[in-house]
Length: 435
Image 1 (cartoon, helix red, strand yellow):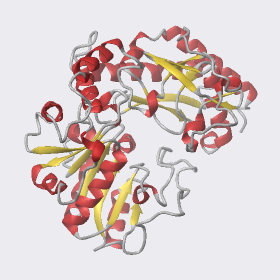
Image 2 (cartoon, helix red, strand yellow):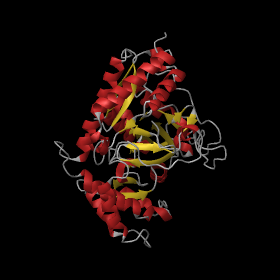
Image 3 (cartoon, helix red, strand yellow):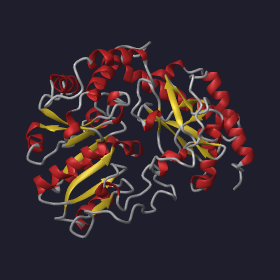
């Protein structure tokens, strides 16, 4: 299906021109056609088109924020009704209050602080932890944002625990707030013994423990309950970062669903179907420090994202097909997508090398590599991503991919055939089967 995109003089495959003005990071360069970076022009439902009008099934979903689908008609209609109230007031509004009441209805003691990005919310959690404990060091596990202390000297966190690509330190230069008195310690292997060793090694310096909820798929709720308890006993403020999961796998995410008991949770991305919104949620006593800690900015009280979050919740709260609500349906969809990719790999003769699995109930899914040599071969893995793009399928490699409610309309037989074609082409041209 064509989405009616206008062609832009941007070169082969919808790439940026040589006079490009966008200063971007390498994550935007993942999506290429004929070796050129794609420039996207329009999205509709579960698809996007590039500047040349080529259409792709989209499992990137803006890296997770789009949960209903691109340009969803019902979402747009509800959002337009809210917009007549304006987009910026002198302070917070009844709409901000309404959203928190709906989100935190079964957490009556909690408050929420509004931000645009989860990186801001995690930084706010660091500041609250430092004010409470008097310590600036952090223990972190997973990707928790791009601000200095969140990313400096960190790993390739989305790789499997046994991947040889996982433990190479990255972002080692030009990062502030990292040092002997402000350690940023990585809990890498998710073993409680390793966490205990970190707490002991940096005793008296650590004020905050932050865990990326995606990594919960690598362990169990009981291990994480014990980790939270250990850190709290050591005097750390505990934070569960639900940026990818909150509002996607369920309204509040993994920590709430499994009663882990973290002091704070960060929720973001999927709350507002693409509009920038993130929340820091915790008990009233702790969040009462928000004013003293200066946890706010001009656009923290902007209203378009809150309208979008209300519209998104209006839709997701209702039954969809046989599912009791949109979150359950999204989990079903993601599970089916993973099954289709696994079957396509098997039918292409590469099932012993690669497949797919649903993550945390199916709101996300990811490619999995059954061959350790392939797991450590970045070139061959990137070739697979390129083959899938060539077959009109956008997903993430080395990172979980995302589904939307709109993907329930997917032609599953067509998706299987295109994925099989991509696996076959990869097997032939990239030497996928070489040992």
